[in-house]
Length: 135
Image 1: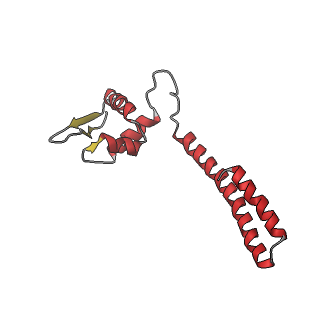
Image 2: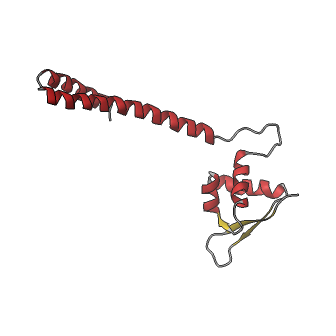
Image 3: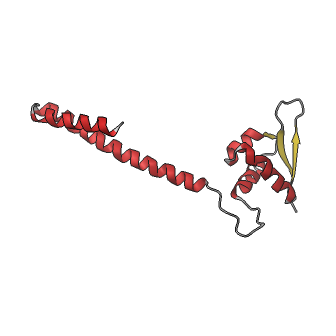
């Protein structure tokens, strides 16, 4: 709700309060409490949103050449959690990645020694499966 609209309503409630019977004042009081709660909920929602955005941000590499990004670890966990092939879209959704970084992270995992199989086998979109772990 826009602040100007809310302010106009509150001003009119104040005028109505003066000329209203006690039962109507009770309803007006509940409306004012609702406005106050709405403001608190909006502030709390904004804080939750900012906390989630900060938590999702990938940390910088600890040292130059370090390729242990959080996104790579999430992608590896998504691949390890399944023993069957999975589409790129599902892996991206589960690991919280966008499509542009997916190929890069798959390459990083392959360079670290993981064998990741990509096949189409009668499908429009390829599916990915972790075949062998590194080491």
